[in-house]
Image (cartoon, rainbow, N blue to C red):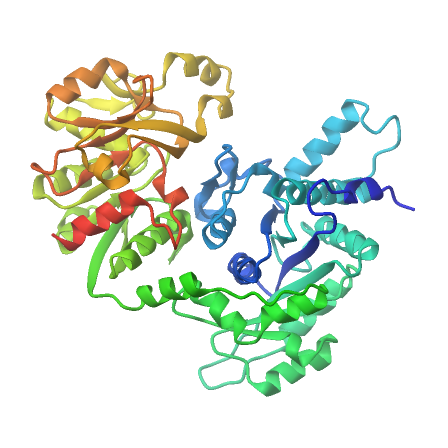
Amino acid sequence: MLPIKKTLKHKGNKNPKYIFVVGGVMSGVGKGIASSSIGKLLQSRGLEVTSLKIDPYVNVDAGTMNPTEHGEVFVLDDGTECDQDMGNYERFLDRNLAGTNYMTTGSVYLSVIQRERNLGYKGNCVSVVPHIPLEVISRIDNAADKSMADIVITEIGGTVGEYENILFMEAVRILKLKKPNDVLVILVSYLPTQGKDTELKTKPTQHAVRALSATGIQPDIIIARAVVSLDRKRKEKIAFNCNIRQEDVISAPNVESIYDVPINFERDHISSIILDKLKLKTNKFNMREWLNFVKKTKKASKTVRIGIVGKYFSTGSFVLGDSYISVTEALKHAGAKLQNKVEISWLDAEDKLLLKKLTRFDGIIVPGGFGKRGVEGKISVIRFCRQQKIPYFGLCYGMQLMVVEYARNICGLKRAQTTEIDETTPHPVIDILPEQKKNIAEKNYGASMRLGIYPTSLKRGTIAYRAYRDHLISERHRHRYEVNPRYIESLEKGGLMFSGFSPDHKLMEIAELPQSQHPFFLGTQFHPEFKSRPLSPHPLFVAFIRATSNK
């Protein structure tokens, strides 16, 4: 008998149910949105839901992953750097999640190795199986305990059949073996076509189910992703060849917005099917607020054109918008609230013709980032927006470069720069604080960053204060450079206003120009996009979109 009983005790809900979402045929099939949508539907049935993401990377967290390969690094309140799907979970569930809801192959192995080094296994031999899968189960149960969840939805990254996620599949197999009535496996699989008028092909999904079966797991539900809805014939074919009921095949065609997905799933009664399989009963169903939000996204009175100037979206000949997914979603949330359609364009900071393209936009955003590539292009964009009165919103690095631009061109501090780019600059208006420099010297880079939630005090009568309608807020951070305290006085004398700062006034959190000088010229040291939700858009994004629509 495997030593699993200890991992199945719960302080919260005594008998939580488990849903595992896995992907078939190809990556990027939509597991994260499927997991988020299922969570939203079950939440609407009156159940307490929490969601987890398992990344099959050896990285201990997502902080060191390349955005153009992996997408955005999302940050939680507790400072955990994680996969972008955690952002989707928070947005759909309208819940703040914690680091206990995220794991990677690297973090799991690290925990097991550290426990072994500390004699946590009491001298027993430690094996990949069962100890790695048992650690995975223990982490899932820990997340269930902390959230007091009725249902725990866990998305397993990667594609069925890959070597990298096989140990996570083993954890599912073990858990389902021990708790057969409490575990549900959902396969999200892709049905391709060979041309416009050809039928959807089910064979790749059949092979995905076969690969999943080879790990000892049979899917209970198959979500069939395709460009169009499945017809009855395709559902019958999948059901017959994959050993499930026809009603357990859920059609998932392409839709206009990710926020349509829960509504679309429910057309095939997915929430009732899940409740029936998990032997849960509830007559509640309330999606009123969500439906109202979706209706607003489709009733735009005006279109506003927003340009996002970055460098993390080019991957070969393709554009990877996922690098800034929280920014784009926050714009959509704000647009829906104001009933404006937000039309987003990606602008390469290294494009030599960039400035000529800016006049066709109603607003410009420079989002977060690291390193010197494209920096001078971004600074030129910021100057152009300031001079031409184009609404500008700088996020993290976008605020730091806004300070650099203002220092150079208004305050007369020639060659002003951030020391991230030039350590020899005569005017380091953006710099690492002294207490952080020791960590950098010791290559302790993680400890040199401000990660997670921090408080900010707001100055009355400013754009920021009018947006928040509060004098004390809290926001999520991910950066290591700050506005240099030595230059705050000269910057403010030059007309730049720091409207948000740490309660001790040491760290500058928001910079802006008064609305009498510019319709919206504002930057934040933090990442407001991480806290925007469909049903509660972030106030700064709402203020920005309002400024662009009044342009």
